[in-house]
Length: 126
Image (tube, rainbow, N blue to C red; front, top):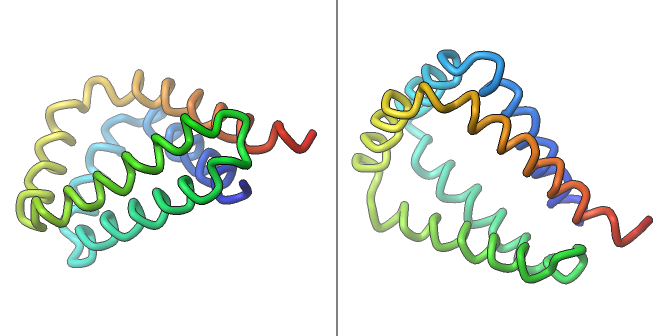
C-alpha cells in the first residue's frame, strides 16, 4: 500500500517537471538514455514495481486495476529485456524528440493519475 502511494507521489513530482518544462524533460530522457545503467535500471524498476503492485493489489480500493497495472509493468520489463539495450536507447531518444510537444499535456494526465494512485492506495484505511 505505501509503495503504491509513494509511486503515485513520485509520478506526481515527475509530472510537475513535464508540465513546467517539456524541453528539460525531453533532454533529461536523452541524457539518461546515454548512461550505462539506463537499460537495466528501467527493466529492474519496472519488474519490481510490477510485482509490488501485484502483491499489494488487494489492499487498494480498486484491486483489479492495480493487478492489471502490475502485470503490465512486469510485461514491459520483460519486453525491454527481449528488445535489448540498443533498441531501448534508440526508442527513448526517438520518443524524447517525437513527443516533446505533448509532454505538458501528458504531465497533466500523469499528475492526476499519480493523485488517483495515492487515493486508491490509502482510502481503504480512512
